[in-house]
Length: 124
Image 1 (cartoon, rainbow, N blue to C red):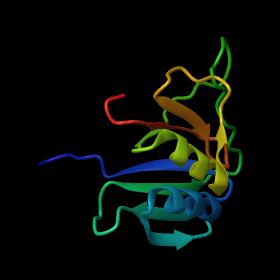
Image 2 (image 1 turned 135 degrees about the horizontal axis):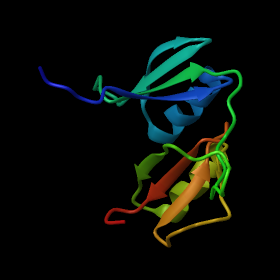
Image 3 (image 1 turned 180 degrees about the vertical axis):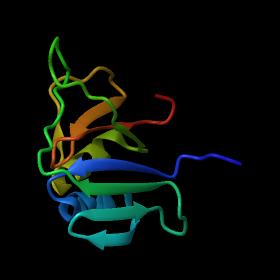
């Protein structure tokens, strides 16, 4: 038997809205949609997929987290060719840039529902 990572799932109070953000950001296509679950996939491929499930009590993590704070646990890393242009585009889609930036060639952002993600340049 072969194992493989098939999907990454984000909990959110509004799966269709958050899926629309990532569909526009990544240029992926929608595979499934209902009010409680949406799945995106790369154009022309089944895997890996990015899914969004209803989590009515979602609370975003703290960044950077401190003692006793809500830890990040996981985030998405998205490679881009032009950090400034793609950061601006992500913000136009509804993302926000975090104050704390740990590296020059990486931008830490939050999606519209508070999940952290990074845009980074090749080699970073």
